[in-house]
Length: 185
Image 1 (tube, rainbow, N blue to C red):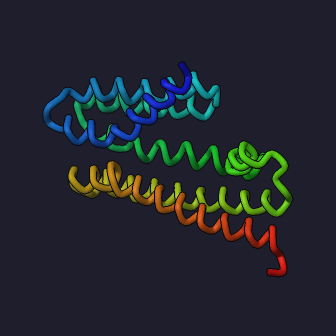
Image 2: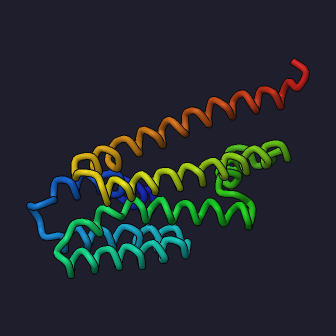
């Protein structure tokens, strides 16, 4: 059941900006606020990570503000909250290793060499920079951008940037691994 629930949560999270955009002016923000609060609560239940409980608390505040104000603006801040939570998770793993990326790398390569650990640390730090930038742009589009611009960035461009980041990192990782296997070649 857990893989299906993870897939459902991932799909709902990816669809969130589109749902907000479609719902603007058509739905009562209360319904979206309920979804907003449910996503991190379910993630906390699945992952047993206290950071998701903090995200659920933040989502609850955003949802309550949206419901009380009858405004969509707090709901448009959810991508900022997600970036902030991911930043805290990744940054805290730099302070208290193993890093998030090292844990992921060890799933494929349990005997990760020290050079691999150092590399995963750098990648984790790079993701932290990405989350700061992404959260900043998400906040700017929510505060000063049109609804359309907010949707384009948070519902499309942010995902494209994440994909590009993964792709570039994967390409660099292959070169780093090749150099480690053939140091004088």
